[in-house]
Structure formats: structure tokens, C-alpha cells
Length: 280
Ligand SMILES: CCCCCCCCCCC/C=C/C(=O)SCCNC(=O)CCNC(=O)[C@H](O)C(C)(C)COP(=O)(O)OP(=O)(O)OC[C@H]1O[C@@H](n2cnc3c(N)ncnc32)[C@H](O)[C@@H]1OP(=O)(O)O
Image (cartoon, rainbow, N blue to C red):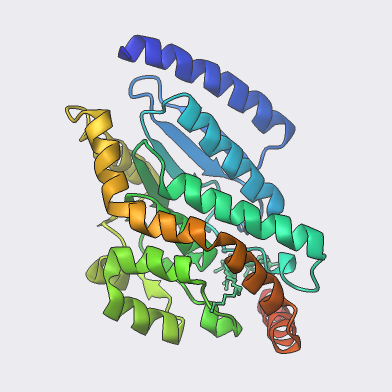
């Protein structure tokens, strides 16, 4: 499709996305006029913790971008935190039906983002623990600001990162580093993340990050989108197939795990600690 035609379609999507954003407003989508690349900004105050509503909007946004044959997407945050990960309140004293929908929607988001046909970049403009890290691991390229942290720190909450969280990290930094990171619940500083390959670039500001992200996506201008996306599928297909095959068992494991007394106690203490930190 010619770029002008494509941009016209992108603008139509933007109009729809804006209307949608006006109604719900947890995700803002702006399509760059020149490049056709969408900047997807998460904006659930205060820390973009991923609850059912935010995940649902992310899922709808990704579906819209895929339908409109997006040229690329940059995922970032409107706040100083990229994303605080899964909303702990979705797992603490959960309503079983909502918990089921919550986890299923998280799985859907992972599948859509991990297998997106268009190029994806995470512009990590603040802390990205656990589910925040997972979102960025689904992308093809990660750009991060200094003085932030990133990692799958679930063990520090007394819970375990599911196998597809671990696989997402392993595909980026390898088995050895993933095992060390997961068993300790490590949150990498920006410098540590760069050293281990968990992120690709460090930028000083979000604006610089947006330019670099556009540059990464622009680097595919001369590559056939068909060949590009099939190559991505070749590399990621095994991980996606195994997640999809195991998703019902994964859901049941999640529901059973969060009902355990020990897990509930741990989550309760963690929520208290977060609140005390704010009061101090
Ligand atoms: C064998 C396999 C078995 C598999 C079974 C499955 C088991 C379940 C797996 C679940 C996987 C879980 C993934 C997750 O993502 S869990 C969430 C992990 N997240 C964190 O640990 C981050 C916690 N937050 C922070 O560290 C900081 O908030 C942060 C650095 C992100 C920002 O700091 P800042 O100082 O800017 O902000 P505050 O700490 O003051 O927070 C502001 C308010 O936001 C609330 N908050 C923060 N994070 C969360 C969260 N994740 N969920 C809900 N609420 C959160 C915080 O309490 C403050 O609220 P109040 O204003 O009301 O006090």
C-alpha cells in the first residue's frame, strides 16, 4: 500500500482511537503523520498498573493497529513510571470471574504484542517491574531512560513468574541470566539492563527515545514487510505456540495459585509495604 493511502487509513484509525480514548482514556494513540508509526501511551494514573480495564484497552489498541496494517508501534507511558506491572489488587482477595477475565486478557495482550506483524518498540521512560517488564519484552526493541529499573521481580512478592514470562526474558538475555534474574527477583538498573542485553539503548529523555524508536522502525523501510514479519514469526513461533497450547492450564494454575493463603498473605504484606512507603 502506498504511504499516502496508508496514512489516510492510519488517520481514520487515529480518529477512531481518539474517540475511544475520549470515552475510556487509559491508552492514547497518536499516529505520526510522516512515518505512519503509532505512539501508544499508557495513561492509567498513577503508575500504569495493569488492571483488567487497562489490559482490555491495550488489547483493543493492538487489534486496531493490526487491522489497519500499522507501520509500527512505540509503547510508552504518560507518567514517570513505565508500568508498575500487574495491578496487585486484581490478585488480592479476587473475585473469581474477574480474575479469570483479567488473566485471559493478559494472555491475549501478550499473544497480540508478541506476535504483532508490525515492528514494536518499548520506550521505557521509568520503572518497569514484573508485568511492566513483560510488556517491554514482547517488543522487538527496548529503549530506556537512566535511573529506572526493569526486571521480573515476582519472587520478591512471594509469587512465581509463569513460564511464558520466563520464556519472554530467556529469548532476550538467555537461560543463564534469566535463571539468575528470576530466582533472585532482580530489578536491573538501566546500566545493568544494557550490559546484560535486556535493553538495547539508553536515552537521556523521552523525546530522544521517541526519535530513536522512530529510527529503529524506519530501518525496515527497505525490507519487505512480508519477509520481515515472517522472519519474526520464525524466531518467535515456538514460544507463541507453546503459550497458546498451554493457556488453559496456565489460567487454572494462576487461579489456584492466587487463592492460596500463603500467597494472599504475601500480597497483603506487599500492598501494606507499598502504602507505608508512600506515607513515610
Ligand atoms: C509455576 C508457575 C506458577 C504461576 C502461577 C501464577 C502466579 C501469579 C503470577 C503473577 C505475576 C505478577 C506480575 C506482576 O506484575 S505483580 C506486580 C509487581 N509490581 C511491583 O512489584 C511494583 C510495585 N510498585 C513499585 O515498586 C512502585 O510503585 C514503582 C517503582 C512502580 C513506582 O514508585 P512511586 O514511588 O512512583 O509510586 P508509589 O510506590 O508511591 O505508588 C503509587 C501508588 O500506586 C500503587 N501501586 C504501585 N504499584 C502497584 C501495583 N503493581 N499494583 C497496584 N497498585 C500499585 C501504590 O500502592 C500507591 O498507591 P496509593 O497511592 O493508594 O498508596
